[in-house]
Image 1 (cartoon, rainbow, N blue to C red):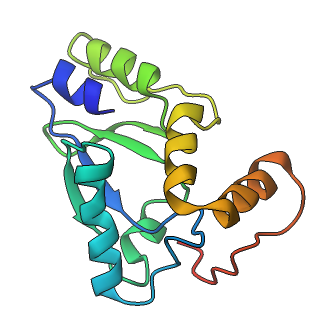
Image 2: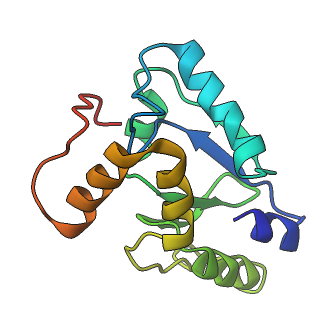
Length: 154
């Protein structure tokens, strides 16, 4: 997504940091706004994040309002209309939608597949530790319940 932000300087890219999708031994589920803010700030150094990062409240209010999915994406046009929405962020699909939005501003130009980007997933899991790897495997291999006990659905 950082590459897309560079390729589309006419677009304001914003990330809403909600929570760690797979907390682990190194990064625990957030229990304070201070801890959440500290983790969000690590995005700039760990992942060279160049997009604007907004931090959701500790209860995940914005995340729940926007759909509560782990990697949801919205394209909002200059008038504030949702021009595209997908349950999973697929950078190639976002790039395609942004290119065609100028030609055809009708909503619905964003089509993605529901799959994690494995390079990003591996980088995040390495940062968070083995508990996070186990949690990711449970979530994405259909092996049962979540292992980290995060009661916050956002």
